[in-house]
Image (cartoon, rainbow, N blue to C red; front, side):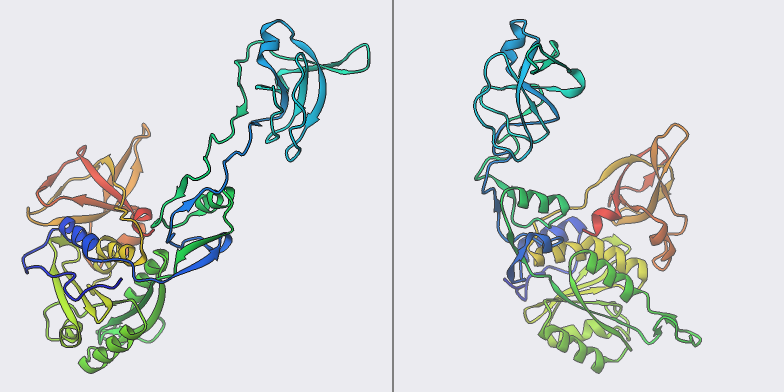
Length: 421
């Protein structure tokens, strides 16, 4: 599926962030092809089809610890000391049924023999040698029937969906897939993203700076975030504010990429050539979001390639990528919608703003003397204060209608770890 030319069509009034996200969810879909990978290679990929358990887990009743397996009914009749008939280790077959009045030495993960229903921890047992030279074990009398036994299928039943399509795979997911018998998984290929920044003032890090010039930081920060989101990034460098060069770069990038991301050049100034180029060679739907930072954000299409134009200010570029770009990328990757998790925490700061605009302010978590966690804000919230993004733990969402935040008020905290997965 690709993005239709009108996928972002709307009027030009300020659009609430929640409405923008909802529109993305309905208008965009997966654009990546699928492939089969071994489980060991699938970390970070998005599952393209439900993963169904091929076996029951565990496949048989087994012991949860090292000890002695026995019949609870034997203890209830007062037979606390019984002979040890044999031993079963993990990987051994369960063997014959347990005879009444006996116990079996058993180890963690070993299958329970027929007839045994309870395991006593070895620490709670005492062994001795009987008159005939046989090993005896004295079992505890306080255990409930079924203690320390794992039942067959108590984790997963065969035929159960253990990983749903659209999930990005973490380490525990790979363990689950392997545990139910899968050697390979159907996954989406990485989203191919082309990236470049624009501006006559930009120089590569380490080059000599002339008056009026700065180092290009956006490209490195945005590329890193894209990679953390599972994208395959092609870095096209930084371009000067030249209409012809920017147009040519966009046309070239759109040929073999599924998403083109830029920073700068999407506002209304004379040197904002990215926006004008998209209008000439593609379809641009400029979103005037009621959000700070990040209002100058452009979304559109170049044929079947989606275009995302981020603001030029470094903080605005990164925050916009987390708030809007993340949702775009998730849909194109085939991921299930996954809003960033919010944590309700008390504010340790005062803040005021005008109504009608949703603001995301950079904050960190701190503990008071009693161990209570609260949220503290950075004094400077300017869109160019990149150091605040390094020091912050996440963002606090100040809603459109909120005008005042006082110390002790509960606020929504969005950790960066949620924004970049």
